[in-house]
Length: 450
Image (cartoon, rainbow, N blue to C red; front, side, top):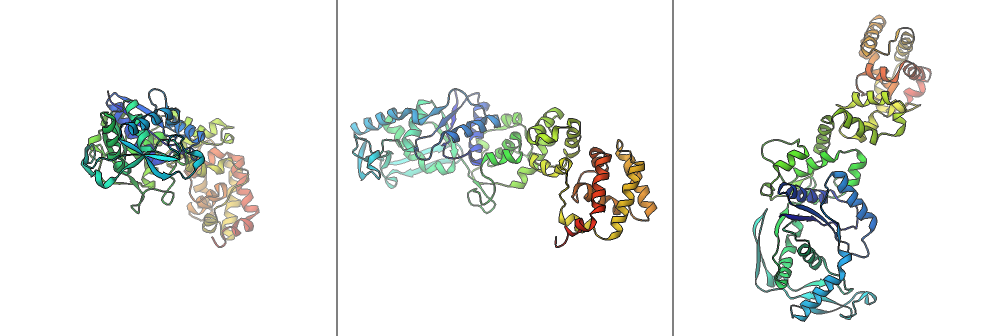
Protein backbone atom coordinates (compact mmCIF):
# COMPACT_ATOMS: atom_id res chain seq x y z
CA UNK A 1 0.00 0.00 0.00
CA UNK A 2 1.18 3.52 -0.79
CA UNK A 3 2.36 5.43 2.29
CA UNK A 4 3.49 9.05 2.07
CA UNK A 5 4.26 11.71 4.64
CA UNK A 6 4.35 15.46 5.11
CA UNK A 7 7.16 16.39 7.49
CA UNK A 8 7.19 20.07 8.53
CA UNK A 9 9.54 21.61 11.08
CA UNK A 10 7.78 23.59 13.86
CA UNK A 11 10.16 26.54 13.58
CA UNK A 12 7.60 28.91 12.08
CA UNK A 13 4.09 29.09 10.65
CA UNK A 14 3.10 26.91 7.71
CA UNK A 15 4.56 28.29 4.47
CA UNK A 16 2.48 28.35 1.28
CA UNK A 17 5.13 26.18 -0.40
CA UNK A 18 4.78 23.65 2.38
CA UNK A 19 1.03 23.58 1.83
CA UNK A 20 1.60 22.60 -1.79
CA UNK A 21 3.95 19.78 -0.75
CA UNK A 22 1.36 18.52 1.74
CA UNK A 23 -1.33 18.75 -0.93
CA UNK A 24 0.59 16.72 -3.52
CA UNK A 25 1.29 14.03 -0.91
CA UNK A 26 -2.36 14.03 0.13
CA UNK A 27 -3.70 13.82 -3.44
CA UNK A 28 -1.33 11.00 -4.35
CA UNK A 29 -2.18 9.00 -1.22
CA UNK A 30 -5.93 9.39 -1.64
CA UNK A 31 -5.78 8.67 -5.38
CA UNK A 32 -3.87 5.44 -4.69
CA UNK A 33 -6.06 4.59 -1.67
CA UNK A 34 -2.99 4.79 0.51
CA UNK A 35 -2.02 6.49 3.77
CA UNK A 36 -1.15 10.15 4.28
CA UNK A 37 0.97 10.54 7.41
CA UNK A 38 2.32 13.50 9.39
CA UNK A 39 5.75 13.76 10.98
CA UNK A 40 6.95 16.73 13.02
CA UNK A 41 10.68 17.25 12.53
CA UNK A 42 11.42 18.98 15.84
CA UNK A 43 15.06 18.14 16.51
CA UNK A 44 16.12 21.79 16.26
CA UNK A 45 15.90 22.45 19.99
CA UNK A 46 16.51 26.18 19.77
CA UNK A 47 13.97 27.03 17.08
CA UNK A 48 11.23 24.39 17.45
CA UNK A 49 8.17 25.60 19.36
CA UNK A 50 4.96 23.83 20.33
CA UNK A 51 2.86 26.80 19.18
CA UNK A 52 4.12 26.34 15.64
CA UNK A 53 3.33 22.63 15.68
CA UNK A 54 -0.20 23.43 16.83
CA UNK A 55 -0.57 26.07 14.10
CA UNK A 56 0.64 23.65 11.42
CA UNK A 57 -1.75 20.88 12.47
CA UNK A 58 -4.66 23.33 12.80
CA UNK A 59 -3.89 24.68 9.32
CA UNK A 60 -3.94 21.19 7.82
CA UNK A 61 -7.32 20.55 9.43
CA UNK A 62 -8.64 23.87 8.06
CA UNK A 63 -7.47 22.91 4.59
CA UNK A 64 -9.18 19.53 4.89
CA UNK A 65 -5.88 17.66 4.51
CA UNK A 66 -6.71 15.16 7.23
CA UNK A 67 -4.07 12.56 7.93
CA UNK A 68 -4.06 8.92 8.93
CA UNK A 69 -2.80 7.60 12.24
CA UNK A 70 -0.94 9.40 15.00
CA UNK A 71 1.47 12.28 14.45
CA UNK A 72 5.11 11.17 14.79
CA UNK A 73 7.56 13.54 16.49
CA UNK A 74 11.29 13.12 16.01
CA UNK A 75 12.04 14.47 19.48
CA UNK A 76 10.37 11.35 20.91
CA UNK A 77 12.80 8.97 19.17
CA UNK A 78 16.25 10.34 20.04
CA UNK A 79 17.36 7.05 21.59
CA UNK A 80 16.64 5.23 18.35
CA UNK A 81 18.74 7.62 16.27
CA UNK A 82 21.63 7.43 18.73
CA UNK A 83 21.53 3.62 18.79
CA UNK A 84 21.71 3.52 15.00
CA UNK A 85 24.61 5.98 14.90
CA UNK A 86 26.41 3.90 17.54
CA UNK A 87 25.83 0.72 15.56
CA UNK A 88 27.23 2.28 12.40
CA UNK A 89 30.36 3.33 14.29
CA UNK A 90 30.79 -0.20 15.65
CA UNK A 91 30.53 -1.58 12.12
CA UNK A 92 33.16 0.84 10.85
CA UNK A 93 30.63 2.58 8.59
CA UNK A 94 30.69 5.84 10.56
CA UNK A 95 33.17 7.56 12.86
CA UNK A 96 33.57 10.28 15.44
CA UNK A 97 34.58 13.52 13.78
CA UNK A 98 37.66 15.28 15.10
CA UNK A 99 35.89 18.64 14.85
CA UNK A 100 35.13 19.84 18.41
CA UNK A 101 31.64 20.80 19.56
CA UNK A 102 30.73 24.46 19.37
CA UNK A 103 28.96 24.22 22.73
CA UNK A 104 30.77 21.69 24.92
CA UNK A 105 28.00 21.86 27.54
CA UNK A 106 25.65 20.20 25.02
CA UNK A 107 28.14 17.61 23.86
CA UNK A 108 27.24 13.94 23.84
CA UNK A 109 29.22 12.12 26.49
CA UNK A 110 30.19 9.16 24.33
CA UNK A 111 31.56 11.40 21.63
CA UNK A 112 33.36 13.77 23.89
CA UNK A 113 31.75 16.71 22.14
CA UNK A 114 32.25 15.37 18.65
CA UNK A 115 29.84 14.77 15.80
CA UNK A 116 29.34 11.45 14.00
CA UNK A 117 30.04 11.23 10.27
CA UNK A 118 28.98 8.54 7.82
CA UNK A 119 31.57 7.28 5.38
CA UNK A 120 30.28 8.21 1.95
CA UNK A 121 30.71 5.53 -0.72
CA UNK A 122 33.08 6.56 -3.51
CA UNK A 123 30.96 4.98 -6.21
CA UNK A 124 28.26 6.70 -8.22
CA UNK A 125 24.88 6.96 -6.55
CA UNK A 126 21.83 7.09 -8.77
CA UNK A 127 18.09 6.71 -8.65
CA UNK A 128 15.08 7.26 -10.88
CA UNK A 129 13.07 10.29 -9.82
CA UNK A 130 9.34 10.04 -10.58
CA UNK A 131 9.40 13.63 -11.82
CA UNK A 132 12.89 14.19 -13.22
CA UNK A 133 13.81 10.72 -14.43
CA UNK A 134 17.35 9.37 -13.98
CA UNK A 135 19.47 11.32 -11.46
CA UNK A 136 23.09 10.48 -10.67
CA UNK A 137 25.75 11.79 -8.27
CA UNK A 138 29.44 11.11 -7.77
CA UNK A 139 29.79 9.82 -4.21
CA UNK A 140 33.43 10.84 -4.06
CA UNK A 141 32.51 14.48 -4.70
CA UNK A 142 29.95 14.54 -1.91
CA UNK A 143 32.29 13.42 0.85
CA UNK A 144 31.54 12.11 4.33
CA UNK A 145 28.68 13.85 6.12
CA UNK A 146 27.38 14.37 9.65
CA UNK A 147 24.57 12.10 10.81
CA UNK A 148 24.67 12.98 14.51
CA UNK A 149 25.49 16.43 15.84
CA UNK A 150 27.92 17.03 18.68
CA UNK A 151 25.00 17.50 21.09
CA UNK A 152 23.80 13.97 20.42
CA UNK A 153 20.88 15.01 18.22
CA UNK A 154 20.51 13.49 14.75
CA UNK A 155 20.94 15.57 11.63
CA UNK A 156 18.10 15.87 9.15
CA UNK A 157 19.69 13.15 7.00
CA UNK A 158 19.71 10.41 9.63
CA UNK A 159 16.39 11.24 11.29
CA UNK A 160 14.61 11.53 7.94
CA UNK A 161 15.78 8.15 6.68
CA UNK A 162 15.19 6.34 9.99
CA UNK A 163 11.69 7.79 10.30
CA UNK A 164 10.75 7.03 6.72
CA UNK A 165 11.84 3.43 7.26
CA UNK A 166 10.04 3.14 10.61
CA UNK A 167 6.87 4.62 9.12
CA UNK A 168 6.94 2.34 6.10
CA UNK A 169 7.04 5.25 3.65
CA UNK A 170 6.86 4.03 0.06
CA UNK A 171 7.08 7.39 -1.73
CA UNK A 172 8.94 10.53 -0.65
CA UNK A 173 7.35 13.55 -2.33
CA UNK A 174 9.17 16.79 -1.54
CA UNK A 175 10.62 19.93 -3.10
CA UNK A 176 13.43 20.11 -5.64
CA UNK A 177 15.66 21.69 -3.01
CA UNK A 178 15.99 18.21 -1.50
CA UNK A 179 17.41 16.56 -4.61
CA UNK A 180 20.95 17.17 -3.34
CA UNK A 181 20.05 15.40 -0.06
CA UNK A 182 18.86 12.25 -1.80
CA UNK A 183 22.28 10.61 -2.48
CA UNK A 184 23.15 10.96 1.20
CA UNK A 185 19.84 9.42 2.17
CA UNK A 186 20.38 6.58 -0.27
CA UNK A 187 23.80 5.99 1.29
CA UNK A 188 22.15 5.60 4.71
CA UNK A 189 19.57 3.20 3.28
CA UNK A 190 22.41 1.19 1.77
CA UNK A 191 24.50 0.84 4.94
CA UNK A 192 21.39 -0.04 6.94
CA UNK A 193 20.33 -2.67 4.42
CA UNK A 194 16.92 -1.06 3.99
CA UNK A 195 14.94 -0.77 0.79
CA UNK A 196 14.63 2.93 -0.13
CA UNK A 197 11.31 4.48 -1.09
CA UNK A 198 10.66 6.00 -4.47
CA UNK A 199 11.40 9.70 -4.76
CA UNK A 200 9.49 12.49 -6.50
CA UNK A 201 10.90 16.01 -6.30
CA UNK A 202 8.48 18.83 -6.99
CA UNK A 203 9.36 22.03 -8.85
CA UNK A 204 9.90 24.99 -6.53
CA UNK A 205 7.48 27.91 -6.24
CA UNK A 206 9.03 31.16 -7.44
CA UNK A 207 7.92 34.76 -7.40
CA UNK A 208 7.33 36.83 -10.56
CA UNK A 209 11.04 37.69 -10.72
CA UNK A 210 11.92 33.99 -10.88
CA UNK A 211 13.51 33.89 -7.45
CA UNK A 212 12.27 31.62 -4.63
CA UNK A 213 8.95 32.82 -3.22
CA UNK A 214 9.43 35.09 -0.21
CA UNK A 215 7.83 37.99 1.65
CA UNK A 216 9.31 40.28 -1.01
CA UNK A 217 6.76 38.91 -3.48
CA UNK A 218 3.62 38.23 -1.44
CA UNK A 219 2.37 36.78 1.82
CA UNK A 220 4.06 33.41 2.33
CA UNK A 221 2.37 32.06 5.46
CA UNK A 222 -0.93 30.23 5.19
CA UNK A 223 -2.17 32.21 8.20
CA UNK A 224 -2.05 35.40 6.12
CA UNK A 225 -4.36 33.94 3.51
CA UNK A 226 -6.78 32.72 6.15
CA UNK A 227 -6.87 36.22 7.65
CA UNK A 228 -7.48 37.80 4.24
CA UNK A 229 -10.50 35.60 3.65
CA UNK A 230 -9.43 32.94 1.19
CA UNK A 231 -11.33 29.67 0.97
CA UNK A 232 -9.35 26.46 1.59
CA UNK A 233 -10.86 25.00 -1.59
CA UNK A 234 -9.50 27.89 -3.67
CA UNK A 235 -6.03 27.73 -2.13
CA UNK A 236 -5.79 24.00 -2.79
CA UNK A 237 -7.09 24.46 -6.33
CA UNK A 238 -4.52 27.15 -7.09
CA UNK A 239 -1.58 25.43 -5.41
CA UNK A 240 -2.33 22.20 -7.24
CA UNK A 241 -1.83 24.05 -10.53
CA UNK A 242 1.63 25.27 -9.45
CA UNK A 243 3.74 22.59 -11.03
CA UNK A 244 0.96 20.25 -12.13
CA UNK A 245 -1.70 20.27 -14.81
CA UNK A 246 -4.68 18.01 -15.50
CA UNK A 247 -4.33 18.72 -19.21
CA UNK A 248 -6.47 21.06 -21.29
CA UNK A 249 -7.37 24.56 -20.12
CA UNK A 250 -9.33 23.71 -16.99
CA UNK A 251 -8.38 25.90 -14.03
CA UNK A 252 -11.36 25.85 -11.68
CA UNK A 253 -11.32 22.48 -9.95
CA UNK A 254 -13.12 21.11 -6.91
CA UNK A 255 -11.38 18.86 -4.40
CA UNK A 256 -13.14 15.84 -5.92
CA UNK A 257 -11.92 16.80 -9.39
CA UNK A 258 -8.36 17.20 -8.12
CA UNK A 259 -8.49 13.75 -6.56
CA UNK A 260 -9.74 12.18 -9.76
CA UNK A 261 -7.24 13.91 -12.04
CA UNK A 262 -4.01 13.99 -10.04
CA UNK A 263 -1.06 11.89 -11.25
CA UNK A 264 2.60 12.24 -10.35
CA UNK A 265 3.42 11.65 -13.99
CA UNK A 266 1.81 15.00 -14.82
CA UNK A 267 3.97 17.03 -12.41
CA UNK A 268 6.14 19.52 -14.29
CA UNK A 269 9.92 19.60 -14.13
CA UNK A 270 10.22 23.39 -14.33
CA UNK A 271 9.68 25.79 -11.44
CA UNK A 272 6.24 27.34 -10.96
CA UNK A 273 5.48 31.07 -10.71
CA UNK A 274 3.15 32.33 -7.96
CA UNK A 275 0.59 34.84 -9.24
CA UNK A 276 -1.34 36.60 -6.45
CA UNK A 277 -3.91 38.09 -8.83
CA UNK A 278 -4.73 34.71 -10.34
CA UNK A 279 -5.20 33.26 -6.86
CA UNK A 280 -7.61 36.09 -6.03
CA UNK A 281 -9.53 35.47 -9.23
CA UNK A 282 -9.77 31.76 -8.53
CA UNK A 283 -10.87 32.44 -4.95
CA UNK A 284 -13.63 34.67 -6.28
CA UNK A 285 -14.77 31.87 -8.59
CA UNK A 286 -14.95 29.45 -5.67
CA UNK A 287 -16.91 32.00 -3.63
CA UNK A 288 -19.45 32.36 -6.42
CA UNK A 289 -19.86 28.59 -6.62
CA UNK A 290 -20.72 28.26 -2.93
CA UNK A 291 -24.28 27.13 -2.17
CA UNK A 292 -26.29 29.86 -0.39
CA UNK A 293 -26.11 28.31 3.07
CA UNK A 294 -22.37 27.66 2.81
CA UNK A 295 -21.78 31.16 1.46
CA UNK A 296 -23.71 32.81 4.29
CA UNK A 297 -21.85 30.69 6.83
CA UNK A 298 -18.49 31.82 5.42
CA UNK A 299 -19.62 35.47 5.49
CA UNK A 300 -20.69 35.11 9.10
CA UNK A 301 -17.32 33.61 10.09
CA UNK A 302 -15.43 36.55 8.63
CA UNK A 303 -17.55 39.63 9.36
CA UNK A 304 -17.60 41.49 12.67
CA UNK A 305 -20.44 40.61 15.08
CA UNK A 306 -22.00 44.06 14.56
CA UNK A 307 -22.81 43.05 10.99
CA UNK A 308 -25.24 40.42 12.28
CA UNK A 309 -27.22 42.54 14.69
CA UNK A 310 -29.74 42.61 11.83
CA UNK A 311 -29.40 39.16 10.14
CA UNK A 312 -31.78 40.01 7.28
CA UNK A 313 -29.75 43.12 6.45
CA UNK A 314 -26.48 41.18 6.40
CA UNK A 315 -28.00 38.45 4.25
CA UNK A 316 -29.15 41.07 1.75
CA UNK A 317 -25.68 42.68 1.73
CA UNK A 318 -23.96 39.33 1.25
CA UNK A 319 -26.20 38.52 -1.69
CA UNK A 320 -25.67 41.97 -3.23
CA UNK A 321 -21.88 41.64 -3.11
CA UNK A 322 -21.44 37.96 -4.03
CA UNK A 323 -20.43 38.70 -7.63
CA UNK A 324 -18.21 41.66 -6.75
CA UNK A 325 -15.41 40.54 -4.44
CA UNK A 326 -12.57 38.03 -4.55
CA UNK A 327 -11.75 37.55 -0.87
CA UNK A 328 -13.82 37.95 2.25
CA UNK A 329 -11.35 40.63 3.26
CA UNK A 330 -12.45 42.63 0.23
CA UNK A 331 -16.10 42.10 1.18
CA UNK A 332 -15.43 43.36 4.69
CA UNK A 333 -13.75 46.49 3.34
CA UNK A 334 -16.26 47.19 0.58
CA UNK A 335 -19.37 46.93 2.71
CA UNK A 336 -18.00 48.58 5.88
CA UNK A 337 -20.04 51.73 5.24
CA UNK A 338 -23.26 49.83 6.00
CA UNK A 339 -22.22 49.43 9.63
CA UNK A 340 -20.72 52.78 10.55
CA UNK A 341 -22.20 55.78 12.32
CA UNK A 342 -19.93 58.14 10.39
CA UNK A 343 -19.14 57.61 6.71
CA UNK A 344 -15.44 57.54 5.84
CA UNK A 345 -15.09 59.54 2.62
CA UNK A 346 -12.65 58.56 -0.10
CA UNK A 347 -10.88 61.84 -1.03
CA UNK A 348 -10.74 60.92 -4.72
CA UNK A 349 -14.49 60.20 -4.78
CA UNK A 350 -15.24 63.49 -3.01
CA UNK A 351 -13.07 65.46 -5.39
CA UNK A 352 -14.75 63.88 -8.40
CA UNK A 353 -18.40 64.01 -7.35
CA UNK A 354 -18.90 66.44 -4.44
CA UNK A 355 -17.67 69.75 -5.81
CA UNK A 356 -19.59 72.91 -6.67
CA UNK A 357 -22.52 74.43 -4.84
CA UNK A 358 -24.94 73.16 -7.50
CA UNK A 359 -24.26 69.61 -6.35
CA UNK A 360 -25.11 70.58 -2.79
CA UNK A 361 -28.37 72.17 -3.93
CA UNK A 362 -29.28 69.10 -5.99
CA UNK A 363 -28.60 66.79 -3.04
CA UNK A 364 -30.71 68.95 -0.73
CA UNK A 365 -33.63 68.88 -3.17
CA UNK A 366 -33.21 65.13 -3.67
CA UNK A 367 -33.23 64.57 0.11
CA UNK A 368 -36.53 66.49 0.35
CA UNK A 369 -38.04 64.36 -2.41
CA UNK A 370 -37.00 61.18 -0.61
CA UNK A 371 -38.61 62.37 2.58
CA UNK A 372 -41.92 62.82 0.77
CA UNK A 373 -41.93 60.09 -1.89
CA UNK A 374 -39.20 57.55 -1.23
CA UNK A 375 -40.33 53.91 -1.28
CA UNK A 376 -37.33 52.11 0.16
CA UNK A 377 -38.87 48.67 -0.16
CA UNK A 378 -38.57 48.81 -3.94
CA UNK A 379 -35.17 49.68 -5.51
CA UNK A 380 -36.77 50.08 -8.93
CA UNK A 381 -39.22 52.64 -7.55
CA UNK A 382 -36.28 54.57 -6.06
CA UNK A 383 -34.58 54.63 -9.44
CA UNK A 384 -37.72 55.92 -11.13
CA UNK A 385 -38.04 58.70 -8.56
CA UNK A 386 -34.40 59.72 -8.98
CA UNK A 387 -34.63 59.85 -12.76
CA UNK A 388 -37.85 61.86 -12.55
CA UNK A 389 -36.26 64.25 -10.04
CA UNK A 390 -33.12 64.68 -12.14
CA UNK A 391 -35.25 65.45 -15.20
CA UNK A 392 -37.19 68.09 -13.28
CA UNK A 393 -33.86 69.62 -12.13
CA UNK A 394 -32.67 69.73 -15.74
CA UNK A 395 -29.67 67.47 -15.09
CA UNK A 396 -28.60 63.99 -16.15
CA UNK A 397 -29.48 61.13 -13.84
CA UNK A 398 -25.77 60.38 -13.35
CA UNK A 399 -25.32 63.90 -11.93
CA UNK A 400 -27.50 62.82 -9.03
CA UNK A 401 -26.57 59.12 -8.85
CA UNK A 402 -22.83 59.65 -8.27
CA UNK A 403 -23.10 62.38 -5.59
CA UNK A 404 -25.75 60.31 -3.80
CA UNK A 405 -23.50 57.24 -3.84
CA UNK A 406 -20.57 59.16 -2.34
CA UNK A 407 -22.80 60.87 0.23
CA UNK A 408 -24.21 57.60 1.61
CA UNK A 409 -21.18 55.32 1.20
CA UNK A 410 -18.12 57.56 0.94
CA UNK A 411 -17.11 55.57 -2.13
CA UNK A 412 -17.17 56.15 -5.88
CA UNK A 413 -18.02 52.50 -6.59
CA UNK A 414 -20.65 50.31 -4.95
CA UNK A 415 -23.19 47.76 -6.14
CA UNK A 416 -26.46 49.09 -7.59
CA UNK A 417 -27.12 52.40 -5.81
CA UNK A 418 -30.84 51.81 -5.36
CA UNK A 419 -30.34 48.38 -3.80
CA UNK A 420 -27.78 49.93 -1.46
CA UNK A 421 -30.31 52.64 -0.53
CA UNK A 422 -33.00 50.03 0.09
CA UNK A 423 -30.73 48.08 2.46
CA UNK A 424 -29.60 51.19 4.36
CA UNK A 425 -33.20 52.29 4.76
CA UNK A 426 -34.98 55.62 4.40
CA UNK A 427 -33.93 57.22 7.66
CA UNK A 428 -30.26 56.36 7.31
CA UNK A 429 -30.05 57.53 3.69
CA UNK A 430 -31.75 60.84 4.45
CA UNK A 431 -29.50 61.41 7.48
CA UNK A 432 -26.34 60.70 5.48
CA UNK A 433 -27.33 62.98 2.62
CA UNK A 434 -28.35 65.60 5.18
CA UNK A 435 -24.96 65.40 6.88
CA UNK A 436 -23.23 66.11 3.55
CA UNK A 437 -25.48 69.05 2.62
CA UNK A 438 -25.16 70.60 6.07
CA UNK A 439 -21.37 70.12 6.17
CA UNK A 440 -20.72 70.51 2.48
CA UNK A 441 -17.64 72.72 2.69
CA UNK A 442 -16.06 70.42 5.27
CA UNK A 443 -16.79 67.29 3.24
CA UNK A 444 -15.69 68.90 -0.03
CA UNK A 445 -12.39 69.92 1.56
CA UNK A 446 -11.60 66.23 2.08
CA UNK A 447 -11.05 65.99 -1.65
CA UNK A 448 -8.47 68.75 -1.75
CA UNK A 449 -5.15 67.43 -2.94
CA UNK A 450 -6.52 63.89 -3.41
